Length: 73
Image 1 (cartoon, helix red, strand yellow):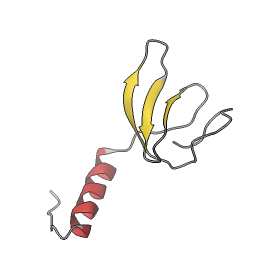
Image 2 (cartoon, one colour; image 1 turned 180 degrees about the vertical axis):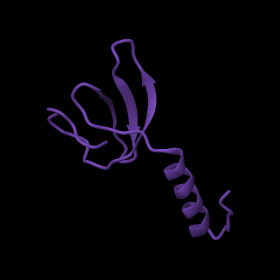
Image 3 (cartoon, helix red, strand yellow; image 1 turned 180 degrees about the horizontal axis):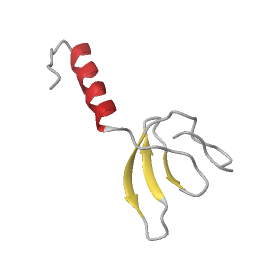
Image 4 (cartoon, one colour; image 1 turned 90 degrees about the vertical axis):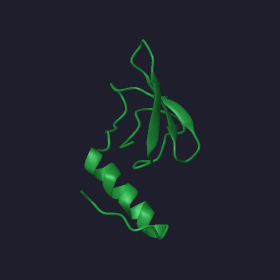
């Protein structure tokens, strides 16, 4: 999430979420890492999809924190 339009209790910028479903109205329903679930509106809310590189890097960092060495390909 980059920013929210006019929500009374917005999701804070840079909070990550996982898309659960996109409904027939185009609302993107997400489960956020802070425990909230919310539908975001592409025409009002700012968001971006993480790249494959970002996800791979994060997975590698997580494995290193767990003491499991990994090799990047």
